[in-house]
Length: 181
Image (cartoon, rainbow, N blue to C red; front, side, top):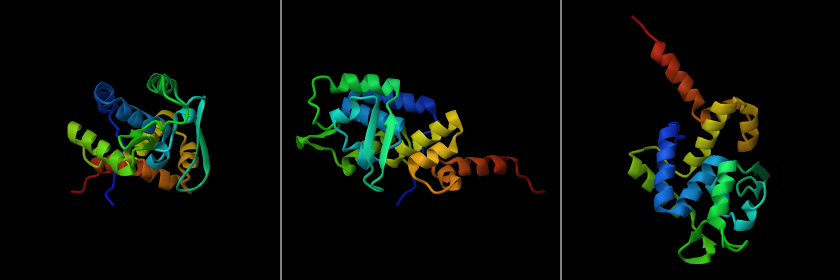
């Protein structure tokens, strides 16, 4: 399995969002939901309109079977409201072209992410990039590793810091100053 990394450049994230918003609303909302919730792609794809109409998105994680709830950010709430206007509560947010009663699959979500990578010249990008991007920016803004550990169901701070790329950043910073001879 290839390692994927978080998106760390706010300008690139905004460029991706602008591009997706202009070209494909479904893909735009998929990306926006991923970076604003930190949920796994398998849980995001199961979301229906009714799941995003309140103040929180509450899911039962497919991988862990644990219930998880997250407040919908103001920006995501506004975009979801616009996107779901006229949709029925039972409709999937990210509908497949194979029919309105089916969400897109993981392979399609991966193709969407690979299209973004191609369009923006990015590497080490996959569906998990969305989750890791959430973690990276959440940590940068709040420095609350315990909250992220809980959100990601990790057993240690070290695991979470490695997961969001902070351990690598620390090592890189040390190596920039490192000198022998």
